[in-house]
Length: 306
Image (cartoon, rainbow, N blue to C red; front, side, top):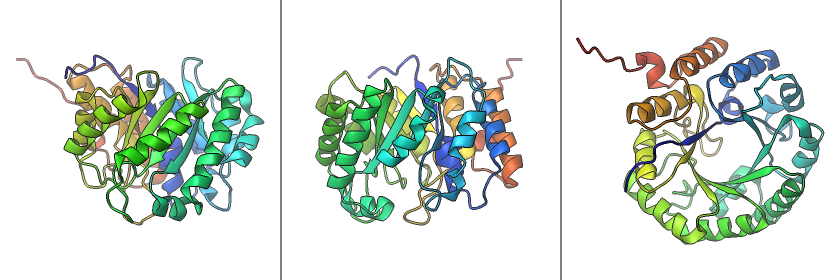
């Protein structure tokens, strides 16, 4: 299958990345980093989540951050919504974002470990949130975690994943994200999965790949998804992120590594790699430690034609 000429990338570092940092990041630093990211050419930016402060203290400043950021009008701001209470809290800032993400797991064990609910209860809650989001004029994405494999249950049948997705689409989700939450996917599996997902879910829904680099296969999985027709990806600058359950699930694929690879392949991302590396360096300085991004260390590819 021919590769696409362009892709859409949602930067999720300010939410998915920051929430896994052990030390609380100052709100002013978060705002400064988000403002840098918003000027890299990225067109979709997940900035925070309205979760309970006692569950994820790192995101307790969601309201303050959302009100303080300065994001160009052509950048779609996304917030993660865990439940209806979170949606109620987010609505107090309705003019500050245009997209919501909802999430649940595709395996019973991971869903219970992550949010302490059975799948049926999470699904019903997400259907209500998505319905309310559509009524508010918001674009709604539903992310299905452990879509490619569960650390507790092993193989997750794609038919189960697609069945959940169908119900979320019926509720009003215009985008379904498939999360390789603990980095268990391999390229052959990914290629087969996205072909089957398109056949099962039709052409009217955007299918998004969300890969982690836990076992070093993140970009290989991106390439397999591209070959299978996927044109939408989520990634995190600096390779920040991970999964709180279980331990050892390292970060998302680095946005700068993703952009570097795609642009070298002639696939347009709309993102300026130099500006993105500047944002990743700023995050490294704020966190005070090396980050997992390869391009941040090696720099962009430079050709000497002499």
